Amino acid sequence: MHSVTLYHWEPNANSGKPMLALMEKGVAFNSHYLDLLKFDQHQPEYLAINPQGTIPAMVHRDRVLTESTAIMEYVDEAFPGPKLMPDDPRDRWRVRWWMKLMDQWLGPSFSMIGWSVFVGPAVRSRDPAELKAAVERIPLPERRVAWTKAISGNFGAEEMAESRRRVALGIHMLEEELGKRPWLASNQFSLADINGFNLAYALPLAQPTLSNDELTPNILRWLRTIYARPATRACWAMGRTSMVERVKILEQPHIAAGQIA
Amino acid sequence: MSLTLYHGEPNGPSLTVLAALFAKQVQADLSYIDLARGERHSLACAHEPLVAMSIEGEGPVLVADDEAMTDSVFIACYLDDVGQGVALRPADPYERWGTMRWCRQMIERTAPAAAYLGCRAHPPQADAAMLKRIESVDLRARWEEILGGQFSEQKLEDSRSKIRQAAERIEARLADREWLMGGYSLADLESYAWLAGMVPLVPGAFAERPRTRDWLARVEASPAVAQALSLARTPEPAASWSVGPEINRWG
Image (cartoon, rainbow over all chains, first blue to last red):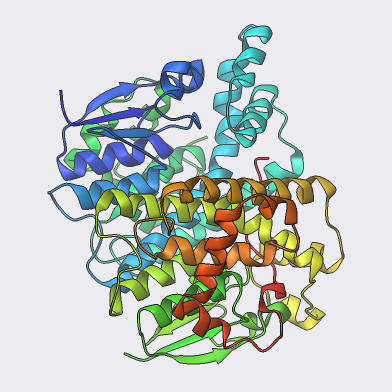
């Protein structure tokens, strides 16, 4: 038994952030997989760990930590290993600025699209009574609304259009920023890159008309460089669903515009 | 290094940053801008991406040499790193995690609610020319809604409930302590900055919370906050509001 246990879903979005941070630091951990699509995160056993029922959560010795970005900062500070925050205070500010944009503005837009095409259809075939009971167990009211919308496919046309606008603008911003330096927020690999990879690893597959080697060469260079890191390989190998296999798109040496239908 | 802080009335995000600046004894040129008139969008740095696309809404900007920084909690972290004296975040990684998590919940849940209620009670005013300068489409849309007086009853009630939840969390947290995290910290500054102006607007949230009211008074009297409040140009700085962060789109 290791001193760290991570409760997580796939190496994707919020779950993947502390997974990859721990692996980059070389911290061994007990992996406790929760199946988001089976609502494991709202079962009493998990609510005893994290009463808000959000994934991920990390237990270090007897302490429970939640909020994936804050967990990553903890992982960086509490364990030896390579530093995942730069030393320069301005660089640190930039790391946090980008993580906030991705966590609160860009990420929710990606996930609204992802939920409408992946999560919603994946759970919709279940027994309606079972789904209703599952939704009623969700502790946070806003998550209850989100799940209800995902299950029913009831995202409004206007909010989907707004999410698509943000995704397109976010891709443009990432491309511009990655043209300034090798990594997203500083000249060294940092938590911002871990955060960003979890958001964008399947970008050329999910948004082929907006991101490819011709339109966004900096993003593709950045994603491939992160994917080549041993920790990333090991982390994505922990995935259990086809969703995370999308990362293999990055093994293609060149993704041309219009290549992926 | 040359530092210039463009700030508004000492309330909300400007208060957090001003108090952090004074607590850490950082020397900076202070330049007042009227955030409630959208004056941030007339600054020379307004179109830099990390200023134009800040999702905090109308907040202060700290210019350090050639870089303009936004987002008050992260500016405060920067000041904590470069300044002197007592740390605004605890040294222990677990307590630091607690501080950052606390601030995240304030940023994400409390700040949008407070700004929404604050703008309804004390509407900001920007003219058409200023609105046109706002580069962020979603920030401009929030301005237009507020200037048009389009406040949804559902969002107002949700916002009041978020303020009640914040006060409830603070009351519980203060059961065995004087400050929210270890000693006087960024968590106190950030929480006070958004909640001080909510006492008259959501009185029920604070009515039976004696520890929270005492804590508000303690933070207000702390030297850094008192110094920030002394810069006020209006008699009631806690009644000065501008457009804030977005209320969660997911519900």
